[in-house]
Image 1 (tube, rainbow, N blue to C red):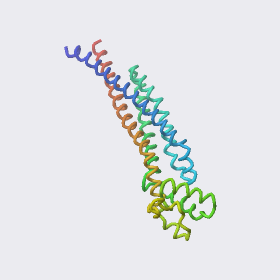
Image 2: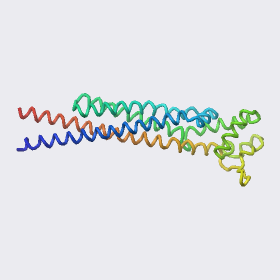
Image 3: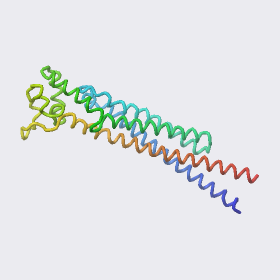
Image 4: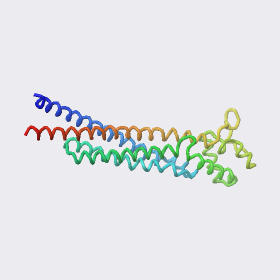
Amino acid sequence: MVAKSSGPLLEKQISGIKFTIFCLNAIIWILGCAMFGLSIWMRMEPGFEEWVNFLDMHEFYIGIYVLIFTSVFVMIVAFVGCAAALMEHILALYVNIGLQVFCFICGLSGAAVVLDYSTYDSKIQPVIRHSMINLIRNSHYETASLILRIIQESVGCCGADGPRDYLSMRKPLPTECRDTVTGNAFFHGCVEELSWVLESKSGWLAGLAMALCMLHVVIGVLSLTLVRAIKKEEESITFKR
């Protein structure tokens, strides 16, 4: 009686796990498409790309490139995961577990690099500071002066770390460093203000990558559980024979 009752129960459990894996892979595919679109938009945004070229902070794109590759791979793995679960093929499920681990590592690495080169007090700040100092030092040239004017007016900042950068280099304080209403110089430098701008852009992308990493872990665990359930079902069939 125990063997007879355990068979249908095991089949229901396997069907439930398969349905869950299928639904989670569908969600992962949708999130992978969203991450791909967001990564491409951040890489190709015309106005922002000019700022990256002005300040020579191309390191910001490293993590985005990693997440573009990861998002494409995630969309492919989602189809593999669905097929492996529906076929109940043990080897395919083991391959799917390995692919989920690889996607987890890539997504986590991409999110870490994006945050490491876009947040406040990150590695991008020395890059921005170096570029801003060079622009201020060469502000007597028309190109450097134009770039400084565009950045400082758009962001509402002054110098690299504040108005003192101009004073220390004995440069006149430009009008774009002053508030148009009060006439006072902006207190914050462009390093700090641009860090907040970059953080606001990259936060959504990093959060999406981390959400996908969590789902990869869940699917990996469920796939391993499904393998054990299938093996148990095969053992029960052999035992009955």
